[in-house]
Amino acid sequence: MSLYCAVGSVDTDLTSQQLNDLLVEGLAKLGARNKVLAVPPDQTRAHSRAGDLTRYAWKHYGDRLKAVLPALGTHVAMNPERVAAMFGEMPFDLFKVHNWRTDIETVGEVPAEFIREQSEGKLSYAYPAQVNKLISRGGFDLILSIGQVVPHEVIGMANYNKNILVGTGGRDGINRSHYLGAVYGMERIMGRAINPVRNVLNYAADHFLKHLPIVYVQTVVSRRSDGGLAVRGLYIGDDVECFQRAAELSLKVNFEMLDEPIKKAVVYLDPEEFHSTWLGNKAIYRTRMALADGAELIVLAPAVKEFGEDKTIDSLIRKYGYYGTPATLKAVEANADLANDLSAAAHLIHGSSEGRFKITWCPGHLSKEEVEGVGFSYGDLNAMLKRYDPSKLSLGVNQVDGEEIFFISNPGLGLWAHRSRF
Image (cartoon, rainbow, N blue to C red):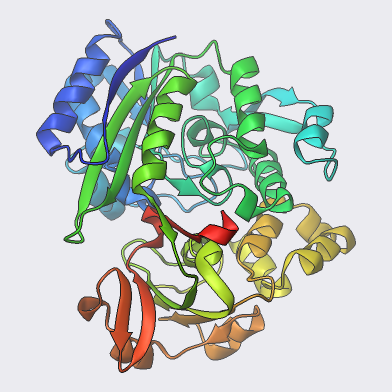
């Protein structure tokens, strides 16, 4: 097991050239490779710099890089425009589409006894370790798993083997891992590198993926004081140390501990990145531990047009809504459609305030009836943008007509909490 690159600190700000040079230096330590597969995230992780790193790997390996498999999970496939925006001038025919329902193979099973132990007795199903067949049967002599380590609502800290087992995983594996995290408790997981969901994925990787030539390329990205993005670290390796190093740095640069709870938060969702509540509810996940009881969270979402990117999940969200853990657990017990789609059930739990604070969604393309129909309050986007103009707000505390608000321009880049909740 090896660590090929470990460069980073809270003050590091890697340039594009430095990223390229560090990647090439790390890849050179692997020796000759002739059939390479790159597994980056999709456009929902555009800030990760994975697009650039994938392109640098393509330039390094040339025609030895045979395919790029974006780790879509349950997200929609990338079209040529999105590929070009994220990956630059790479040939579109290199890019393969992961279908989480049909393109997967179950390579092993984490026993129900282990899930029962990790869930503190709440769940007793086995976890199927599923990956895209290109990974398990493609015959590649190098699989580059590229992505960003950042606080995450399902698995505490994103990336590492999640990119493979969830990003290129199958329906049952994704559903059961997400539901485990939701039932265990999101606020007990976020920002923690070691937790039940990570333990299950580590078990699966250690038992069923060790024979595969997977090398992880992990970035840590945060906001600069001027609002721009800085790459604080790059870690390349083939085992858990690579992830642990990145997670330690991410906790330092992506996590903000607040002395006082927030009474009103305003979160802006970039229209290039967020088109659904499935993704946009990061505004809720990443701020919930910072919000006071009775607080209001206002979500400004110009491009949000649907609840779930997947049609089945969208219909389930519309049917059952974001009404909290007890209601969702009851619905799972009583309804086969939701019981058969546990990632949707997990999402419904994640997206609820559990009645503790108010969530006002201001979407560009959903009606008042649709928003209120899933349990949120509705706000008129144009009126809210006029009052809370993102171009005039700074990150953190602002005064708007005598009202104090806490502004966040991209919830996907951080985690906020009050000391009493972490």
